[in-house]
Length: 288
Image (cartoon, rainbow, N blue to C red):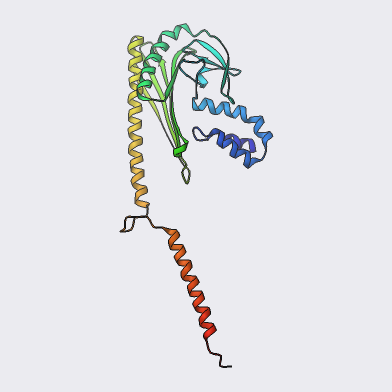
């Protein structure tokens, strides 16, 4: 029972705060043995879901840790450099880098999509990263593109991330585009507010050559991202208006009320009243 609760809570840890939630769970459960036995598996699952970016070698483009690049037994694929590597989920260390052969039948499409998507991410996501994979599932040839961008501002009491996953299913005459976009933000100054929003996208794309097809695919991604972002801004503006309607209005002085002064003044009045009553009792004549 405890392990299910631990796994569920850690899987919902806000972006950039996984270690803090682990420490909180240690204090609550008071069972380090249970946590040590399961923390590697839970961390691996969390890293895969978060698309965490890793630099396999120095001065190279970062690769995302995703299920699409998972080769099993702790090994992952870097499709940009055509290498596999072992990844330590707990310490985020890379080791055992070696060449890896990609599917040649999809490599021209994969590279075309990777080139177009990398340019798009570099232009629109200052802190963003992306990885593109190509794989055949039975008779289906699928290009999978993953995007991740995050901003951790602990000093300003907020963290957030944007991630999306896109599949380009190649068919003889056209292609199907399937996408999922997810945004999560956590604000924790004098409270805790967690905002999560996601959307699914499904469209068709007329097949052309690799370069034109990749450009059209990335254009679909850009349009979906823009529409989703505009929708988020509209919803947050409505939410802000609603919260302002519930907020206590300022007095005519246009300053906030100092509740400490009011409480102190009330205490002083009560003390003065108690003293006055005591003095009146002592001065009351005794007719006995």
